[in-house]
Image 1 (cartoon, rainbow, N blue to C red):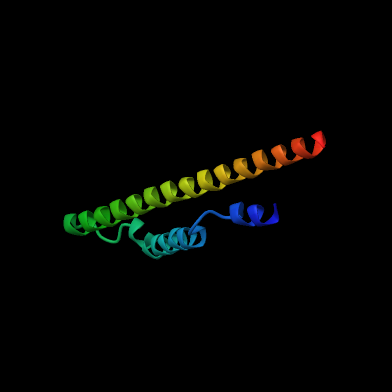
Image 2 (cartoon, rainbow, N blue to C red):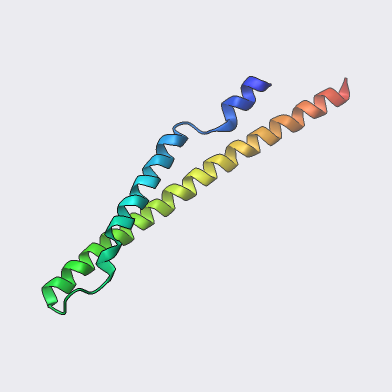
Length: 94
């Protein structure tokens, strides 16, 4: 049972996916200065708008990845709970 518990503690490549989300968030944090309007020139504003769109896309990607990680963890947790209940039920019968 311990081996099965260890197997289901973390989804495959959880650390890699979490590291990728962390890297995306750090990249976004570095680009946040583009939110301040530095110039009233149309080309500069368009450039800032383009950068903000990139940040928005990265935030959306981070959110999707975070939700997927949470769903994966919750699915694994549900499997552990189910297996534990079955084990308790089997032991109660003996």
